[in-house]
Length: 455
Image (tube, rainbow, N blue to C red):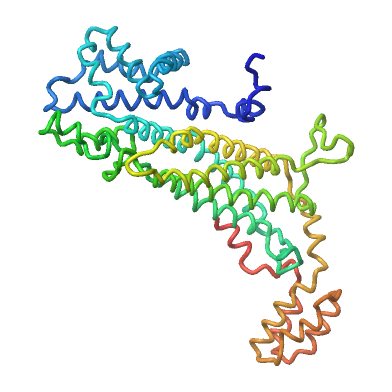
């Protein structure tokens, strides 16, 4: 059977393939090979800038343009060529080296320098930097823009509904009122904090040889400051140098990056579930799309499928992030290869995250606030004012205020008349009594509106 989206094992490459445009070329094996090409070429260019390495002088403008074209024009055919080399070498990084040497050997001005490709490098020098390039680009191109879009929608929703009084539901029960805008602001504030951390998260890299000591570098060119050369390369890649490594960069910073992604996703799972619940309560109405079917047997249904899809994909991503965080910083002695196959799944975790973010955005675009339904829920919940009354009673030292309100309201159906009758019996200053008598469930919202507008 021919390859088809219908036969793909991963739904990211099948059902959701069209939604992975860009990320699939960045975080696939093709993308990894392209990132390796970037690292190998930047390393070669860096070597050519070091005056003590006279055997490889600075490249001409034409040769540098050619090297840049190998990056800019890297194609699927190029990746297949690397794969052909790998069938012989059984080593993917060595296959990249041979691919580049083929290119150099066909260009007379570069052929003399072919053996400086991959000079003094171990495979992990190339791989860790390639993955660092991949993560930096994924963050800038996909993760942060998606999070910005979500935040923009949340902030707008918060501001527009800052004054929309809403019944809280602690433990699922009627509780002290809030506003819809404030509850959305809570999510936006949490998300903004994690987005800031993701933006500033350092991505570390190393290019220091077989066990992290520049052994081969020093024996070939003892007069060169190899730590400086390594740092120069890593800065070109817009990463940060980790000076202390074994054969592998220990992936601590990578684990921190994934931990932030995991926290972002956890916040959004929480939000998706709340939205699901608010839709169930009728606080949000869902847009009806004429040809869509909500249920194969119940024609009336409009299901919150985008929030459900988002929740499911966020959970899948977090399961992978959890393994990355636990696994990647661990390597036996100076190197074992158990991280290699795990790292190849970075794109899967990022793909499920991105898919979830887009589902969430689509869900937010399809809902509208039902102000009448929200108001109907809160308007007759006079019992929630028990907190306010007993707190004022405490201020004026009335004996057992909590217990008196508990006796009056717990498990009881309390209306405005009953509550006002109780307030009239209180021995408190008249201005305090008036303030309580003027209070309604919809006005007992504290700073909620102010906080919602400030986000």
